[in-house]
Amino acid sequence: MLMWTVIIALLLIGLTLIIIELIFIPGTTVVGLLGLIFAIVGVVVTYVHHGSETGIIVLAITLSVSLVVLFLSFRSGAWSKFSLKSVIDSKVNEGFLSSINIGDVGVTVSALRPIGKAEFNQKTFEVKTSGSYVDSGQAVKVTQIESYQIVVEPLKN
Image 1: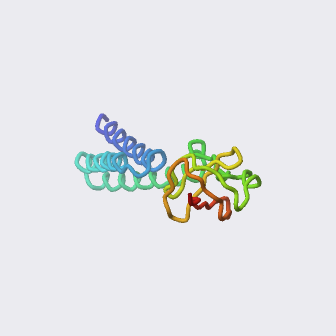
Image 2: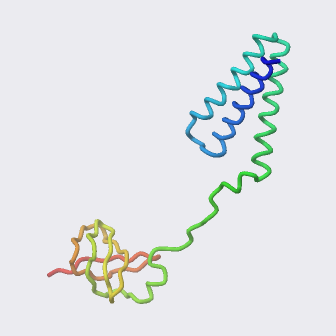
C-alpha cells in the first residue's frame, strides 16, 4: 500500500509540474523536465515493484489522464483568469498633429539619433530625421508628417 502511495504521489507531482510549465511559466523547460522525470519515475517504480502488466496499465492510465487534464484545462478557459488582456491602442503623437504643420521651426529637446524629441509651439513631440544625427538644442524644421511620424531636418546656421 505504501508503494502505491509513492507511485500516485510521483505521478501527481509530475502531472502538476507539467501543467505548471505549460500554463504558468512556458519556455523555461526546467519545470516541465522535472515533471516528466517524476512521471517516468512513477511508471518505472510501478514496473519494478508490480510487474510489466501493471506497469503497462499505469502507463496507459497516466497518459490518458494527462491528455484529458491538459485538454480540459485549455478548453474550459480556466486559465483565462491568469492571462493578460489589456491592449495598448494609443499611438505616439496622437491628437497632437493638428497643432504642427510642415515648415514649422522648433528646437531639439534631446539628441536625434535619428529619433528623439523636439519642441514646436511650446509642445514636445517625438520626431525623427532622415538619417542624420542632430544634437540637443539645435534648430530643426518639419519636412514631412506621415502616419503619426514627424520628420525633421536641421536648419543650417
